[in-house]
Image 1 (cartoon, rainbow, N blue to C red):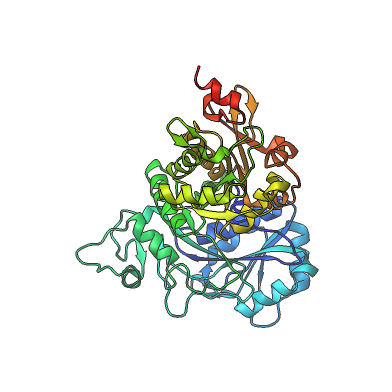
Image 2: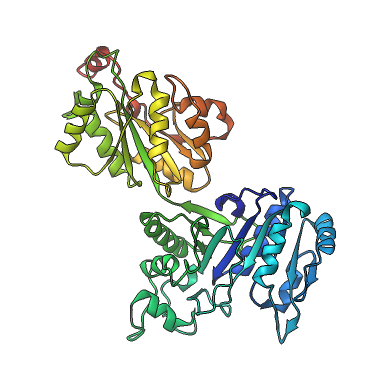
Amino acid sequence: MLLHQGLRLTLNPLAPDVVALVGGGGKSSTAFRLAAEVAAVGKRAVIAPSTRIAAFQTAWAPAFLEVGDAELPFTAIEQQLVQHGYCLLGGPVVGDRRLGLQPEQIDALAQRAADLGVAAITVEADGSKMRPLKAPAAHEPVLPAATTHLVPVAGLDAVGAVIDERAVHRPELVSEVLGAPLEPPLRLTPAHLARLLHHPAGGAKGLHPGMHFVPLLNKADTPLRLVYGRLTAALLAEQGVTSLVARVGETAQPPVVERWGPVAVVILAAGGSRRLGRPKQLEVVAGAPLLAHAVRTAQQSGSGPVLVVTGAEEQSVHALLAEIGVNVTIVANPLWAAGQATSVRAALQALPAAVTAAIFAPVDQPFLEPLLLRRLVNAWRTGGDLVAPLVEGELRGAPALFDRSYWGELAALQGDVGGRRVLQAHYAQVIPVPAEAAWLYDIDSEDDLQALRY
C-alpha cells in the first residue's frame, strides 16, 4: 500500500492535503517519498519543512528552491512543478543544516495551491537528531495552521532499546510522558510506544479538531520489528486510533506494510423472517438462538465494536441481548420493513467516527467461524477495501468487509438489497478470502432447519 492511500489523502488542489510529520525514525524519508508518490500519480506536491533539515537532503528532491523570509517565489515554484511534479523548498544553510520555512509561508503556499495545482504539501515539523524516537520540546512541533494530517513517526528499532540518549531524543521528556522513571534502565515496550504516540504531550501535541491523526510505525523491516509494530498498532486501535505499519526506507517495496484501526462488525437482525414464519433472530439452532451465535462470533473475532441492528421483534431482541449479557451497541431501524438497505444505512449512521471499516454479517449463519472474520480484517489491513468470502470458486456476499471509502455507496442503496450490490459493482476490486461452505450455511426457511436434522 502506498503512503497517500494509507493516509487517505484526497489530493485535491482546491483543498490540499498538508501532512505534518513529527517524531523520529524516518520523517524526512516519509516526506520525500510521499511527495514522489503524489507526483507519480499525476498530481503535484511540495516538500516544505518548518524545521531545520540536513543540508545534504536537498539532493533527495528533483528540484530545490531556496527561500528567505520574504514572499515565496510562486512563479519559480510553478516552473519546477511543471517540469518535475514536485520540489523542495528550504531556507539558507547554517552550519550543516538548512533552515525551514515559517509556518505562515506554508499557509500561504496552501492558499495558493489551486493556482499552482498543488495537491499535497509535506511538512517535517520538528527535529530528532537522527534518533528513532523523541518527545517534543516546548517550542515543538512547528505546525502550519493549514495542517490537515498530523503524522507522528517512530522507528520500531527503538522498541526493546533502553530509553537513553543513544536511542531517544530527549529521554527525560519521554520518561515524563510515560510516567516512568529512567532508572533502573527502562526499555521501550509496545505499550510505551502507543502511549507516547497518542499522548497530548507526545505525538499528538498540536492536534486540533478537524486534523487527521495517523501514527506511522516505521522500520518494520524485520520479523521482530513487524511484531512490535502490530502490537503497538493493536493497542492504538483499542483507543480508536488508526495507524500505519511501514518500511519507508525500502524503496523496492510499497512503504505501508499494514494499516490498523477500529473495524466494526454489524449484525443485521432487523428482518421480518417472512419465509420462516417466526422470528429468525430468536430461533434456537445448535443450542443457542441465532442472534446469540452471531454476537458470540463477532466478539470472538477480536474486531472492534459490535453493532446489532433491530427492527422486527425489537423488544424480544432487546430482551435476549440483555439475557445473554453482551456488550453491543443496539441500533434501532424503524424503517426495517422497507428492506435491508435501511438497516445498512442505520448502521452506517451509528458507527463511531473512529471506525475505519465495517463487516456486515447476517444474523442467520449459526456456523460462521470467527476465523473468517479475522481473515476479512487481515485482508483489509494489507490494502483490501472490499473483502468477501470465496467458497469453491464462488464469491459470496455475506459476511463482507467494506472500507470507509465505500460507505457512501452503501448508504445510497435502496430497497431489499445489501452490500452484495456494491460488491458486484466493483467485482474486480474485491479481495477474496477462503471460506468453508459449512461456515456460510444460512437459515431462511423451515426446510433449512429440517436439513440440519438429517
